Image (cartoon, rainbow, N blue to C red):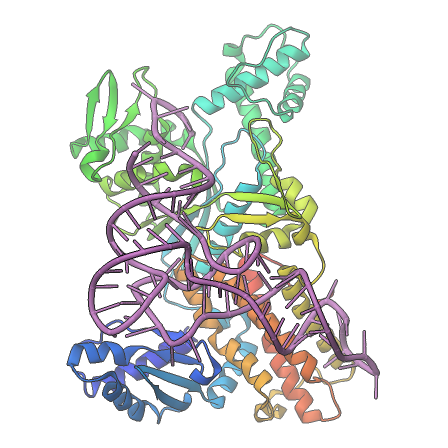
Length: 551
RNA sequence: GCGCCUGUAGCUCAGUUGGAUAGAGCAACGGACUUCUAAUCCGUAGGUCGGGGGUUCGAAUCCCUCCAGGCGUGCCA
């Protein structure tokens, strides 16, 4: 499936240019025009051809224009100095697009280019040492939206959460709970320096005590296996609950311990050994990062004390992913892991990842604000705002919309007051309101007997105002938007497009009455706003945000 | 010190594989309800794209340099 307007145009351009430019075309752009006078779309190809042929952009451009003008998809094709071609989409193409979205619903923005190839998105993957915080919310929103958007392109997407259930952090965690248990037993004992101080561990200690009777005599060593399983299970189920409430479901929860159990670690290491990328120094085993990526420091895989590092199991984990046959593996990490990127990239290359098969998306940290004031987010004191609290305060929809409003690269200022507001200042309500408003009109139309309407009675030629044309144009370009945002792994473009459509609708609404005495016009407009409604619902669906029918 | 990210209107940010006179939302100011949701809309104003240099037909976008903020720089994860 492919409803891309740009692809159609691209093909026409290739065909036309081929008539006087025999060799392969340089990569050219088709952009949405910035101004009304410049049409709907434009291309810079004349500049590029001029550079290749020595002719002026004007000659190249005018040649193309004369060949392209005959295509039915355009109502007008202009050459625009100094070297652009501007395209005006014909009303027949716009009407065609509108009919398609009505007919195909959310399949309208579906593409078949992924060809069912498997892609994995691994995200959040927070250590099971405490509740998820706001930053994890950003990862969850990003990962889920990216996964949704890739599904649209017909990739077979798998969502995965990697659970680090072994290692030093877990030991510290379990020891902390053990100390809490001892304290509950009345012992005068303090949390270790590097312990976890959060109050939630006291609750966990209590429930472990209830479940297991004789905690009094047990040493940490004896109790460790069962206690650690209990603690991790408890915390993980809270994490699952939070993600569930946020609307995120995983296909797989992958436990780090699995890497150890199935010998996968030694397999990965011998893989590297064969390549001569492992050596011993100071009693430890090292990975020769420097041999793969210039300027990178070598890293320890196995410590002097015989324990493997997180890096070692992570290499094995990535080898495991590769073996599962993913066409592409996408890891989504917080900016605090930025320093880890080169070494895992190096390892990926060493274990046979094709270039580009591993994509690591780094998102910048979230700053919370209440009105104008910053809220400190210090994890150490345990006074961070959890994802749960955020959801309680602003709700899933606002949280997701805000997280997805900015590019991952950008630091995110999250204003809690704004997210809660039920006014047009708050973009999520603005968009949802447009959808609800359309639904309200459709309900009324139904009462009056306009719906369901037979499609053959709808005459779209009656939609001739600029406001109606703008809406149709946004619908016509929607598949391209979805495709581009998906391929770029940048869902924030879609929040932007949702705002654009909502705005165009509200503008239309104040100028035109949908339900009127003019029955034919009413039908045509109902048809149009139903298309707009589907567009909004579709985008919101990709973003994981609801599109309410009433507000 | 070094690495990565960021610096665009009062605020929050799009735009960064070079392309036309740099955009949006909010805030500010001024307007619009015999109406299918005024939870909306319209208009006005707002800019040395952090500074400086360079590359070229053309730079917010590429290169160099400097400044500011964030994150990282573990035999933690």
